[in-house]
Image 1 (cartoon, rainbow, N blue to C red):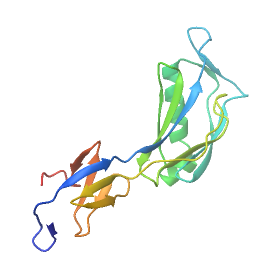
Image 2: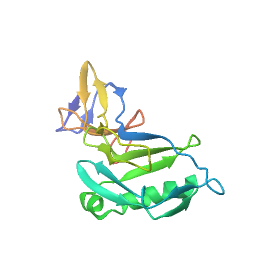
Image 3: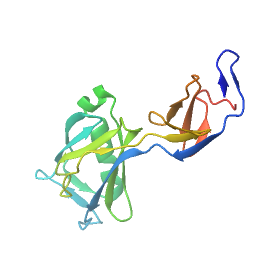
Length: 174
């Protein structure tokens, strides 16, 4: 229980049921068949649509030949520097794995974090709207769903669940 008046916690048992997740889109594999293992971004494939947390944007890549690492950086830079997305505070992370698939993830955790590719991304197509999930914990016998990674208990105690471990918002051990 949590006594807000005295700021004490007694016999509080918290178990993580499920961690918060981010909305993530994985494309089909690109072919890096150009000179030196590159992928060509040209007039016909340089622009795509993306929606992050409900904000719609059109993103244009710089034409050229890219290695996987270069294309990963170009995608992340162009998406995150888009003025419409910046104004909304919407950001993504981008990775291209050894399988040559592009993985775009919303940096926001939970059900408020959404992501979709609304027009063709480098020949890999589009995606339906994807949504992250909020953290769920069991406190005593009660199931609580947080907002993103943060849980607020009935007594006002707040804590975050980061990868399965519970921590307080100020980082202090309790």
